[in-house]
Length: 281
Image (cartoon, rainbow, N blue to C red):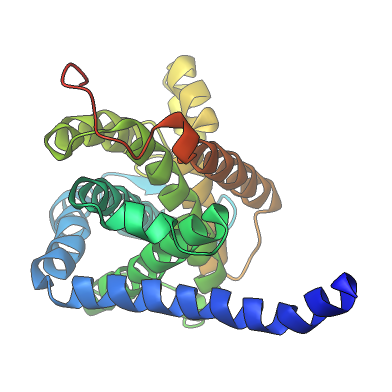
């Protein structure tokens, strides 16, 4: 009898879970829409890199024929996936900032007491952050198109799965950070120690073979171990309709590990949702 009852209740549970996903995503989207400065900064930041930095090195730096490129490409073409990754990275950190804020005002505690698995509720937060990240990426791609950055016509569609997976991975890493950051005022400093090393120790600005040729083998090693590198390379190949399976596997692994650590960290029995001690940093 209990088995029959569970089977009958399962559709209701699924509807409840999907309703929670829709509600959390809608809430985060409305919050984002009401903060137009976030969209402007999300687009302006990589656009400045594209217009100033990439344009300055347009004729100085380039990339020879290496996958996924079929010919020599200019620097602005090479840097485009890295700037897309920058949008995903900053949104992942913004999502963790929102979690820290929600914990301070008590909204997160209320959310996690809902009659749904804690892992599902946190996953809903990841999905909401990823939706916002994808929207910001397409806004930036419109700017890149306006500045005549070469990209395959179908690239805007083929890159979508990579954007979703990359957004989930970086948001999961941000979720781990939100476990350990107890106060909102400590978040900016922590972001600087995460965002800038992740961005500069990656293939966002230069390929690995050039790093190795320069003799900086330890930087190449750090870039290979950097999850952001795998997100950037996954996006790079996806823009050209190709699947970088090694990078996809690495991104999936990083996302799964980070999410599992975050779910464990948000265990109420560990006191993560409680008030931060006065001497914590």
